[in-house]
Amino acid sequence: MSPQDYAAAHADRFNTKLFDLVRIPSVSTTPELAGEVKRAGQWLVDEMKRIGFPTAELIATAGHPIVYGEWLTAGADRPTVLIYGHYDVQPADREADGWATDPFEPVVKDGVLYARGSTDDKGPVVAHLNAIESLVNTDGLPVNIKVIFEGEEEVSSLHLGQFVAEYKDRLSADACLISDTSIYSAEQPSIVYALRGLAYMEIHVQGPATDLHSGGFGGTVHNPAQALAEIITKLHNPDGAVSVPGFYDDVRPLGKDERDEMAKTPWTQEDWSRATGLTTPWGEPDYSLRERVSARPTLEVNGMLSGFTGTGAKTVLPAKAMAKISCRLVADQEPRDIYEKVKAYVAQITPPTVTSDVRLLHVGDPALTERDSTAMQAAIDAYTQAWGRRPVFMREGGSIPIVSDFQRELGLPVILMGFGLSTDGAHGPDEHFRLDLYHKGTQAIIAFHQAFAERSRT
Image 1 (cartoon, rainbow, N blue to C red):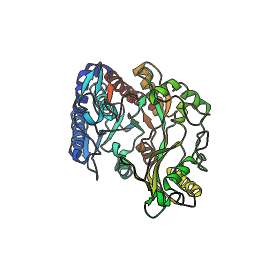
Image 2 (cartoon, helix red, strand yellow):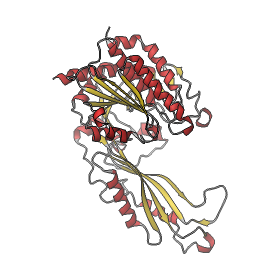
Image 3 (tube, rainbow, N blue to C red):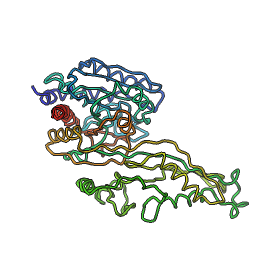
Image 4 (spheres, helix red, strand yellow):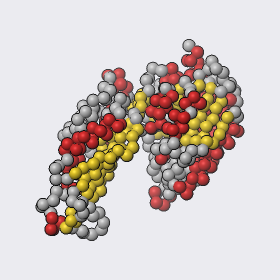
C-alpha cells in the first residue's frame, strides 16, 4: 500500500482526529482558557507519540507552551524538513459573534467542517501529522522531520522568536514547511512566496493642557482632532501613493515575470466589489488590485480617537487626538526605518499650533522566498500530484512574522503550502474548512516529502 492509499483508506479516522482537536477551545488571548491551550498542546504531543515520534514534548514558555517533535531516522544523507503550525485559535462566541452553531462543536454540512480553528490552523496541523503517519506505516519517512507547533500565533507569537533564536542548532533543517496560508481556489492551487511585513504605530497630537469649552475657546485654539485630520490627509498623494519621503526607496521592483504570474490569479473589480460592498477602487493606478494588496507597501489609518464620543452632545474642544497607523511592507523594507521616516515626516507637517508624537508599537519583517529552490520545486511537484494542476505563485498581503524569523535565524527557505480558501472565514463567525481540501492537503504533504527527498539526491 502506498502512503497515498493509506491516507485515503483512513480518511474517516483522520476526520475524527480533527474533530477532537477543534473541540478544545484553545483561545490564546483569553487568560481563563490557558488550561485549554495547554490541553490542545498536550493532545498534539499524545498524537505524535501515538504515531511513533521518538521525540515529542511540551516545552514551557513564559506564555503558552510550544509543541516540539523530532523523527530523524531517515539518515544523515537525507534532507530535514522543519514543519511549523499553530494550535491556538481566535475567540469565538455563538451569540455575540453570530455563529450558526457552537464554534467548538464540529458540524459537517455538505462536506464542509464548521468549527473555530478548522482552517486556521488546526486542520492543516493535523494534515501534517496524517501525512507523517501515512508515510511511516507504508514506505517509511524519506526525509528527517522536525515539528514545532506553537500556542501563541494569534497573540503575535510572543515567545517563539526567542525560542527559535535560543535553539538554532536544535531547529536546523534544510527547509521549513508552513501551511497557514490559503490557495487561489479549490480547483487551482497556489504557492505564496512573499508576505508583507508590518510597522504599527500611533500618532498623538496634543493641543491645550485640558479639554476646553468650545464656546469660550473655539476659533482661537487649533483643535487637535482637526490638526490630526490635516496631518493624515498629507500622508498620501492624490493618486493613492504614500507621500512620506523615502517610503519607497528600498522597495524591490516587480519584474515582468512576477507581474505575469500574478495576472494568472486576477482579482477583478467585480470580485473586489462583492468583497467590499464598494463600487470604485482606490490606490496606485499603475498597479492591479492584486498587486496593490500583495506586492506594494501601504499606509493605513486603523483607528482614530478624540474628544467626546458618547451618546448626546458635549461641546468640548478636545485637548488631544490619536490615530493608529499600520504600514504593510514588502521585501527589502525595514520596519524601524519606515517608522523613523513616518515620524520625521509627521514632525515636518505638524502645524505649529499643536505638538505631535509618533510611537512605535509593533514590527514584523517582510518575507520573500526564492522560487527556484529545491524545496520550492518539490512543492510544485506536490501540488501538481495532489490537485492534478500546476500551482501558480502568489504574494500575500498579510504578515506571518515567524517566517522572517526562520529565514533570519535559521537561514531556511520557507515554503508556504496552504490548503484552505480565503473565504473560509478564519477569525470570523462560521469558520470552516472543506474536508476534501483537508484530505488533498494530506496527499500534497506526502508528495512534498517524497519529492524533496528525490530532488535532494540530484
